Image (cartoon, rainbow, N blue to C red):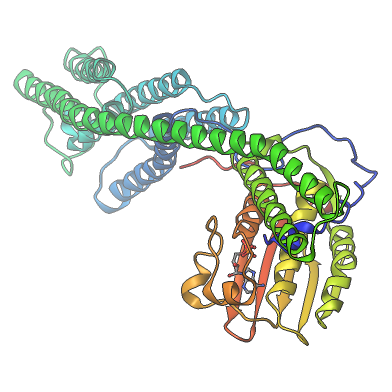
Length: 487
Ligand code: ADP
């Protein structure tokens, strides 16, 4: 934002819509803080992913039964098998519900993730044991699928916990195989297509149970060692992330504190210079007065820069601290255009606006600042005789604000940098030397704090268009969709 721009006071923020004026003071938008730790987020995402995989696994099992029955003459009793797979779908739906509900209520703790993973693995092992029995027992080599829950256990749980699941898996395999051997469970023959009848041979049963049990422990061992290394790296990353955040916070605190402390003495200097300039302390000659005026202008510019830094640090650190209400974006546009019209007229520019009604949930001062900053930039960077058009349209969900000028434009290599703090393009510095390069970073912070997006299209010497989209108020459109479960 430039010194000249800042030296004009902003238009009053638009009136809050009576419908929701005074609504609770909350963050305008932004993702809820479901996960205090990155690792928890990662684990929770995997939990969702395993639920998705289970749907496919259930469907694949059904298809296998069909193929086996019709294609290869494997005569598995269909009803109990289908019923077991139906139970699998049922508990999977239940887990999905639990996980979605915890996510919505922001109650995802490490304990919840571990508990849910344990429950999922136990259900899977019991289901697999039932399917093992219903599809030929020791004769069915497809039961290497027992390793799938072990992979999940090794990845999500502690090594001790994962070995406990391997032990449970081995126990269930032994229970099924030896119960069939001893006749406690009646063997379900599946035909020669899968394997010869070996359930009554103690050597075959021993080979099957021991091999499968060892396989389960081996998978858990491999998976846990890989996962523990990954987890260690994740924790290191998380520590580095926390340190970076702390550093950022102290940087911002320093920025806020310094700018706050500097404002008062600088304002005092401006007042003092003004007093001397007006001759209240005695007349001074023309040359001194001219220098005093220049010193005052520079000090005013410095004060504005410091105010912008303070504002920027506030928006960066505490975007959620802005009080919000229902704000008419159309009113903000109309008032800003009216406010800056004399400035455009002084430069011989044609300033026009075209608005549709659109309200957003937001902070009125911030919205006015956002619109004002874009208009003032357009006026500032458009040479005499040019035009500035401000358009506001909306569809069912978002408001789209376009500020379009026929000005100096932005070079392609500068477009990516104009939202960086203090950045000013070369052509802008030539046209207008006292800018601060803080206007657009503030605009972007405001847009983000309101859950919107900002985009820019520009051609050097032809003009620039800034496009801002902001989500409309919930009552202006359908309610926003509930957060999706990461999967
Ligand atoms: P300032 O205007 O004080 O320089 P801003 O952060 O508002 O700071 O803008 C950053 C830079 O983006 C400007 O210096 C200029 O190079 C470029 N810019 C912004 N708006 C326009 C525009 N409408 N036309 C051309 N360049 C622009």
